[in-house]
Image (cartoon, rainbow, N blue to C red; front, side, top):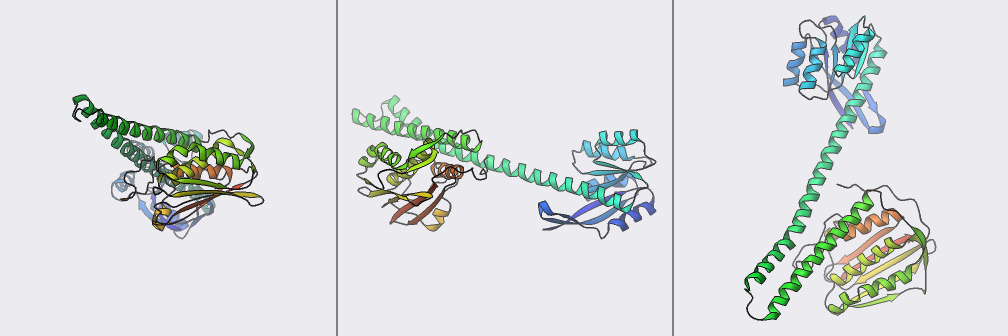
Length: 385
């Protein structure tokens, strides 16, 4: 990527300003690690006062600043930069410079110090170092702003996810307090059950957030051992039996008698729980869920196929983001934190696995997870707010 930086040369001697500009006019800098090619747009200021005016009208990215300016000195300009909280790399230039002058300039905020006379190579080297510092600072600022925005969006989404169930429970409690549901106890039982359901959803949200934070912080300790994937699948199916029975969903399992992986048992449990719970939750009443495990040699695959409401390709593409829930008329009454599949993706990142999704609206969805039989080093951590 090509970019042009504004370089301001500040010196009260015109010949020096012209010599500096001539040296740098066609100079470009290549920062390979940042994939940047940088050129300079050069301005000149013959006094400290003129330099300060540039801060108001045409802010520079870099400054070559004479230490011994009359009236408004180079140190005065540095003080103004500090007062205005402008993080502009400054290379201080001084004739017959002493060590004390260099220390004084550095304490005042100069990035580098160059004693006159200096060679063109010395100048270019100092400018290159200052340029790199400028771009590193700029990238750091962008990263900080991006993280701030992600954090804002994360907290906004979290507040939204908590606000709705709290409002529903508050309304139910007012009805219970004022006996507004009539004389039938059944009516009040329904209100209590709906409130308990909302509380369960909030508990699940908090639990998912803790899991996600633990994974993203790198503090989740993995306990690797031989895990029977087939036994874990059967256990997860039994765990969700009541959920499936409530919707008359039939859950089946096919696979070998046993299949061992060197992995973390809790991670495997979370993978199965997310896949099977979603397959039941987003299924049609009376539908089916088919869980299958295949031995693929160095890897094993888990396939969970349902006959549920399905998704469009656009919805599938958004599926693994935080708080991503498919919202339409078919899902409006289905509770969920929107974090389950995001956690699934991060668990697979930890253990070197992959997930593939196939889905069609009203035809159901198929999630296929591929896991290595032997534990592998985790992939690059995914970004967290």
